[in-house]
Amino acid sequence: MSESHSGSNRELVVDTMIGLTRLSSLHRAIVAGSDRMEMYLALRRRGFVRVATPETCRIATAQHAVGLITGQNSLQAIEAALARISPFLCTSAAVAVLIDSRESGFCQKIRNKLEQMGFRIEAGVRCQQGLVLSACRQSFGQMESAA
Image (cartoon, rainbow, N blue to C red; front, side, top):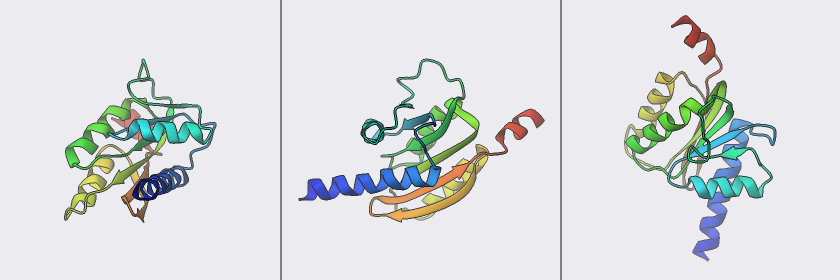
């Protein structure tokens, strides 16, 4: 019973991330984090065939419209996953991050890191596995050319 309950929670997180990032089958998505293969397989089962992980992409060419980070439980792990997928994301990319820590100030630290990387926070949705935070970097290309 707990296995199927855990599976349904995982499916809810996948659904939430898809909804928040507005991921469609036409988008390229990159998945990072300790549960990246589970997320990758869940997306493939749903018909998203343009999904990859940093390990399966040969060259970081900024062609992915969506980045998903799941399974992390420390600030350093989430920051590392963000840094890992950032070169793969296009200038108008959306990201969703599963935050499973209840540590005081943890969400604010993640928000700050996303903002430092040029993302604007759009939404946060609570689910049983934690908080799914979504952000978009619509003006990242303008910031890059101004720098």
